[in-house]
Amino acid sequence: MTTTNKLGLYLHIPFCARKCRYCDFLSFGCGDSKVLSEYAAALMREIEIRSERWRYREVDSVYIGGGTPSLLSEWDMGKILDSLRDNFNIDEDAEITIEANPATLSDEKMERYLRKGVNRLSIGVQSFDNQILNVLGRIHSKNDAFYSFQRAKKAGFENINLDIMFGIPGQTMKMWKDTVRQCVFLRPEHISLYSLQIEEGTEMYRMVYEDGIMEPVPEITDREMYHTALRMMRRAGYDHYEISNAALPGHRSRHNMKYWSYDEYMGLGLGASSFLEGSRFKNCSGMGDYIRAIKEGAEPVDGNSVENYTQREEMGIFIFTGLRKAEGIELGQFRKVFGQELFQVYDRKILDRYKGMLILDGDRLYLSEHGMDISNRIMTEFV
Image 1 (cartoon, rainbow, N blue to C red):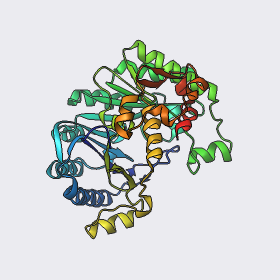
Image 2 (cartoon, helix red, strand yellow; image 1 turned 135 degrees about the horizontal axis):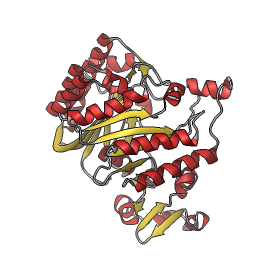
Image 3 (cartoon, rainbow, N blue to C red; image 1 turned 45 degrees about the vertical axis):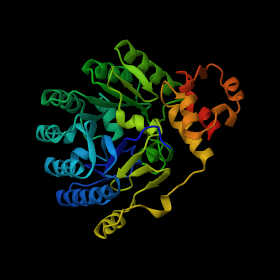
Image 4 (cartoon, rainbow, N blue to C red; image 1 turned 180 degrees about the vertical axis):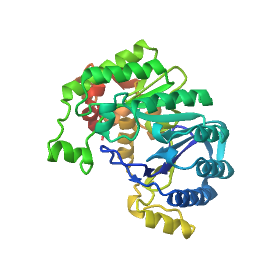
């Protein structure tokens, strides 16, 4: 049982102009327009295949991520958006988001997005410091980021998210404050702030832990950067509503709230994840397997990825994701979904172990701001 009956759609575009040094997502560099168009055609065919079973469900959020969705031509993206509306029951007021890199976001693309119903743009800025952008391996400059935002506003976008990142090797507190200050000055409706996670297998991991070219940022500095940014955003009127997200009033990300609120979502495209009818599964992550399934008219699901968790495991997921929200979880909602009281399943002594960090206030269980610093440790108590 989920908390609402409206469905979220996630579409994965796995291509980038160049893969960033820190990225461990399912993505790869590609500049061949023919390959991009062929993938767009396969994605539209998957939309048709999957909608045969799910077109009755109302869809109130669509999120097109990657990779770099703005790498696709405006014509291919327009056809994908048309296909979604032709095949799914998308609400008139649905939130429709596209991720974009400042270096690949043209006026023509933005005009096309708006004409096809996109009403939210998420721009991957990461930093307003060229030195740090170079460390990350980004293809855009500080000026590209400024101009992209200004052009998006001029084009007519009234809901823009900016991604920024901290805890980057070589990044000083002054650099980070400058990025936050410039981000707040632009006043996007939404800001996502992420602590850099240096994942094994990435170029960044090799540079830091194998070649020793860079020094990782100490944990204490990382946390200081996090809390400094939150203070600056609050003073500017932003609501810190989830561990890594802040928004002006009325602009919380509807799609991401689905992930944190135990709602259902369908993933379309290479390697995309779904949570439907109690099952969690992913699409094929190999392009050959994905295209082959589409050509056969089959759902491109990776059979080895299908997970049907026990109720206790699902309870853990409910709590783990719900505690990411500043407002936490409602015990009544837990009872409604699982038919049991949370503290009949879990030991109330957890509250004593994390006093002041994990807080029970009436019917609501949530993490304090400093509890968020050790959120993973606290959340593992419920998994």
